[in-house]
Every structure is written in structure tokens, then in C-alpha cells.
Image (cartoon, rainbow, N blue to C red):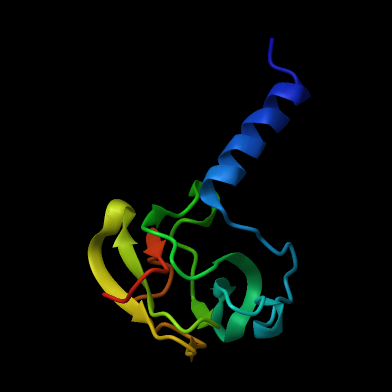
Length: 123
């Protein structure tokens, strides 16, 4: 029998493994990105939902299924380059998120394409 307790336990395990904290606001902003973190946003202009953030030094991980192929902008408030990939497991194209940089729109060719990312170096 599946209960709320089982659902909650599974959700905690999945959320912990992904190390991503979403901001459930349709009006996210770059200021919602904590200091010393790399953040990815659902919509252009650092708006929509804050899909997740990580500190520098995190190795490659796949994006959670609900956030897969949804990123449109990013901010890197660390001193380390980060990167994101088109496909899970680091497949497809790779784009660097420069240390201390932002990108308010990744462009039509790259929009809603992020499936994995890392914050331990650029491409």
C-alpha cells in the first residue's frame, strides 16, 4: 500500500540526491540566487522558477526530471567556471557558465536544452 509517508520518503531521497533547491515563485530574480552559488532559471531574464543552485566544485549530475530541458538563463556567483550539457550524463553540446558571469537568455538554439551540469570547471 502506497501512503503519503512513502511518497514523502521517496521525495526526500530524490531531492537530496539532486542537491537542487527550487524557488516556487513565478517571479524569481537573479537576487534569489544565493552568494557563492551557480543558479539556473526557468525563464529568460532570471525569471520564472529558480530551478536550482549549487556551490562550486560539484561534479557532473543530471538535472531532475521535472527540471529537465527547462533552463533559459543562469547566474554564476562563484569564482569557478561551471558547465551545462544538452543531454544527461554530459552528452551533447557543452556550454561554460563563466565565473562571476550571467546570461539572461541562452539563445534560441540552446533554450530549454539543459539535461546535466557541473560546477567544478568549464567545458
